[in-house]
Amino acid sequence: MDYEKLGFKCGIEIHQQLEGKKLFCNCPTVIRKDTPDYSFTRQLRASAGESGNVDKAASYEQKKQKTFIYQGYNDTNCLVEQDEEPPRPVNQKAVETTLQVCKMLNCKIVDEIIFMRKVVVDGSNVSGFQRTALVGQDGYIEVNGRKIGIEAVCLEEEACQVIKRTEDTDIYNLSRLGIPLIEIATAPDIKNPKECQETAAKLGMFLRSTGACRRGIGSIRQDVNISIKEGYRVEVKGFQDLKSIPKISDFEVNRQVKEKEKQGPHVRKAEADFTTSFLRPMPGSGRMYPETDIPLVKIDLTNIKEIITLEKKQNKLEKDYSLNSDFASIAIKSGIDFPTLFNKYKNLEPKFIVNTILNLPKEIKKRHNVEIDILAHSEFILSSLDDNKISPSAIEEILLKLNNNEKINLDDYKAMPLEEIKNKIKEIMKENPDAPMGALMGKAMAAFKGKVDGKIVNEILRKLQ
Image (cartoon, rainbow, N blue to C red; front, side, top):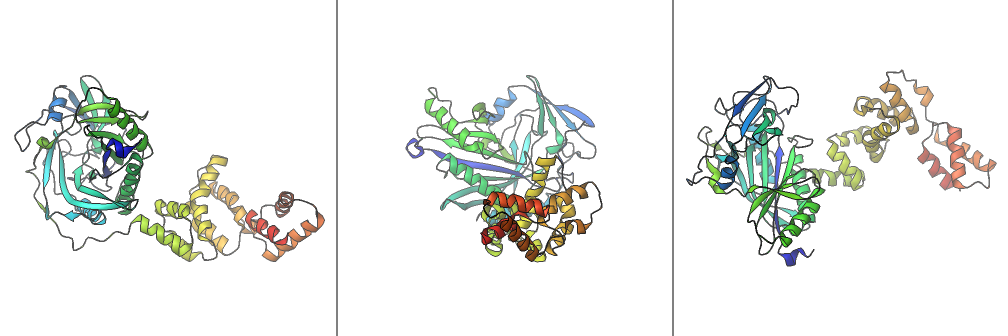
């Protein structure tokens, strides 16, 4: 599609959960799905916002007249989540992380944080509102050599997790409610769906760089705002897989182009089949009003440490240790301190260390259906390799034995001296003067019985041919 001709405009909202404690109490950020300890019932109504008007999206939800059942846990939830006790002082670690994100995104940071109540009566918040606060604004990031504006960075509380919906009743789990959530909203500067995906990926990289984010399915969500010329803004919610962003965005553009009766601005859901479906009218500013239970939070940037982004760390790995971008990327994403390993085991190539720790366990899982805790054995394996006590080709067998708590005799896996390997290969080549490379390789590996790495044999054969 010609997105420029269509007048395509797009912005994205990223919602990232933080690890640790909840935003307004000391309950853990653990999302549970086991049998709850208790439940209670509520019915919610939409209250007027600061402007004195009731938000139309909230009014739409209230008309459903649903009953909400909340399920909780004695050791995971408290009275704050039940809305039976006022919020406690805001989680300072979450505030610091949000400020670090604002600095990475080149934002102007507010003088003081003022929490507001955002009316939400679809049952996802027990109180009928979500607490949210603006922390930074007017920032930017660079994508494809262009600046994508950052309109706002907010700190807010996560909603409950829906368990079941019926026509009259929705059941929610309380364990997710109150987890600190950073929301980043870009300006409508994105020019096409592919760039939208790339922008989301870069924002995700900045967030992961803090080291404070929760990981796993549902810990980060994307909402995409899309409009075309002579059309209207539609917010598509519920993206969890970056790969689906271009397909669903394309579907939404096509839907708006073909639509005969204009629905006006509204919210839609991203479906698993890459389509979208109507959710509710577009909310407006009428749903906001001040939070009176939380004091203003003064901003002090004195002790806010600057974050080295994962992107910069990856570039440094590539430069300092001659890793290609793929190996440097998986090394950084793993969270393992690979530079320390590279410097400790200097006789081993950095690429080999990364491959052994991150890829070899996957290969063993695929071949033997065995889970290997490589980090539990990494020091033994890497030090044995570094001291030339074992051959690289023996790693898999050794790991399988270690996994079964079998004793290891290193003499059984001792690496052959390089000169001895060369002499043996020369002997094989002399005995098979007309044999092709593949046949010589096979005979050599059979002769070495797994005590020599295939790459070494291959390199020597090529040099001697």
